[in-house]
Amino acid sequence: MKTQSVLLLAVILVIAGGAAYKFGGAPGEKTETVKKPPPPVPVTIAKASLSDIPVLLEVVGRGEAYETVTLKSRLDGQVVEVPFSEGQRVAAGDVLIRLDQADFKARAAQTEASLVRDQALLKKALADVERYQTLQKQGFVSDEKVAETRANAEAMAATVQADRATLELSRLQLSYTTLRAPFAGMVGAKLVFPGAAVKINDTALAVVNRVQPLYVSFAVPEKHLPRIRAAMAKGGIKVDVRVPGDGKQVFSGETRFIDNAVDSTTGTIRIKAELSNKNGLLTPGQFLDVSMILDTLRNAVVVPTEAVQQGPNGSFVYVVKPDAGTEMRKVDIAASRAGSTVITKGLDEGETVVTDGHSRLVPGAKVKVKPPGEKSSGQQPPATASAR
Picture 1 (cartoon, one colour):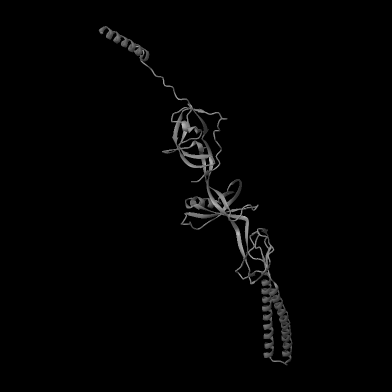
Picture 2 (picture 1 turned 120 degrees about the vertical axis):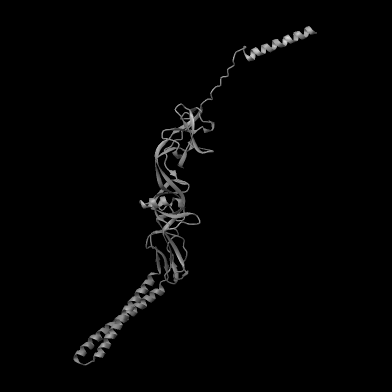
């Protein structure tokens, strides 16, 4: 029994020694673990560049007629003709409404007859004055009679003047029966039809809008007012107007009006810009996108917007060093638009930034630039920046 125990113990020691030699190495020999570096992260890059960037303020506005008028009659009457077509373009002086002229023609004729009669009486009175003055010289009539005759002649002259004024008024009233477009523009819907009775300065007959040129009215936050006034003092502010959903066609104009008070309920101030609207493509009341240049950032550092990331401490970019290592750099942003971002602090011209592949990056990681055909660097010439 004792011999078997000794043999079993010897076998265990042999097995343990072999395992120690296999897994632990030779006695006194140190074990070294080699840690492989992580592979480079594939990224796309772009270089920071300098550019003069216009700072735009973008708002939504509405088209507004340069001039608008609601036609109303200057006398009571009845509509006999509405010769215009709804929505048509009209020139200044085009006939839009005709009222019944019969009564006014009769009044004008009556006044004209009265004028002719009184002119004849005036002629007779003047002849009487001349005759009595001759008789006075011969001593056949008294001075009082001559004075009376002269007074009658002067009264008839005044009557003729009154008749002429009444005739002019009758002719004016007759002309008021024809309502014309006061300026070139577009006429709206027909508001009356033949047979309708109209009241003086009461019944709306038609609406005419002047759309060439056209105003665009919009509101901007009051915080931009100092810069807007400064730009206006230098000669006005250029604006670009687009129809929502149509970014290709741009209508250019210039600001013409700034309201004299800020709306206390919204904290905005009303501004109007004037557009030529030569082709008449824009309409009063239409929603429009308005961009106005408030300022220009000179020699601003610009990078593609996708290079800028957001973290707990604000905006940052990954800067690629000459040895292909990376550095996480905190930056300050002035404005962003059209795929470009203006950096005011934290980045210099010519430095390389990562535009794609951020998710696998850590500070100090090595990078490998993707081939151009695999993904574009995303660098575009910056155009404009939006005001914040």
